[in-house]
Image (tube, rainbow, N blue to C red; front, side, top):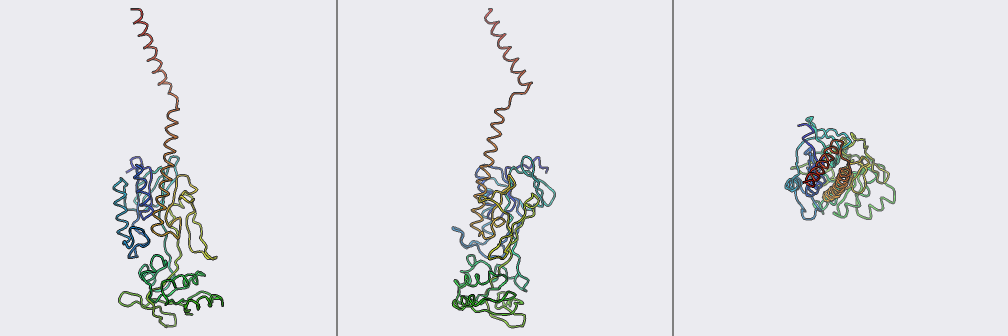
Amino acid sequence: MSDKNQRYDVVVVGGGAAGLSGALTLSRARRSVLVIDAGSPRNAPAGHVHNYLGREGTPPAELLAIGRAEAADYGAEIVRGNVVSAEKLSDGFRVVREDGSTVHARRLLVTTGIVDELPAVEGLAERWGKEVLHCPYCHGWEVRDRAIGILAVSPMALHHALLWRQWSDDVVLFRHDQPDFSDEEYEQLAARGISVVDGEVAALEVTDDRVTGVRLTGGTVIPRAALVVQPRFTARSAVLEALGLRPTEMEIGGHVVGTYIAADPAGATEVPGLWVAGNVANLMEQVVGAAAAGLKAASMINMDLVNEDTRRAVDARRTPFSAEAERQVAERVLGDRRHGLQETSR
């Protein structure tokens, strides 16, 4: 179909928690909404979503299915596909899909999320979201009181070790390829009962489809039931870069942990009419926070559209008649006057 018959108030790029929340909000506001979802949610490897009030422990795929059904009930259209590019127009955006089709959007909400880039250690990617974890608030309860390892890949390793100690008293910090700790840092670790293992980590040991240990390059295996890793969070920003936005690096403790797209607290970017929500704008956002961000962005988008609709209505009301319209009105007035004189003469 051409973009002439595919026009929407809002096109949402990305069908995760942020995108579906935004679509639900906008559809309930009686806006025409299209959600284009690539079908590759970041939390797909995880078994359950946590800290989502009212949906605690729901599998990620189930939560998304519920969200799609709710948004569709209010009229949102949801399609599977990849958006490869977008172009800013005078009256909105042209969005280009992988199959070459285009749609027109008065406003654009991008919720494409981030990619977790893992260290190059054998076995990490295969166990990601299972026994290889990064967020204690997402997964700490599930591995409580188990043997937990922390893989040091950044200066944040000490912080991660101390944090995860909250969920288990059996925590080992693998120094891997990081510099040695200071005396003060070693004292903190010792005070919390956290052991430090020198030497690079080569691979995970897996038995019966579960992580059972961490193998060093020298061959030593340290029994562990879970391994904590800090990935690099990279914004899925191709569509946004096509519109002139560039990812911003996020630093914690002088270390770059990833990239995101800068926006105001409601998700508005420096490109007029373009909003972002979820992890693409906030690397630390959990699922419930991403959903809230989608709601906030959607409400601001609707208000922006209301303002535009009002401006158009005022302009239409103020627009003077065309010359032809004025001629027709003048003829009607003159005809009425003539008719009135004829009636009077009688």
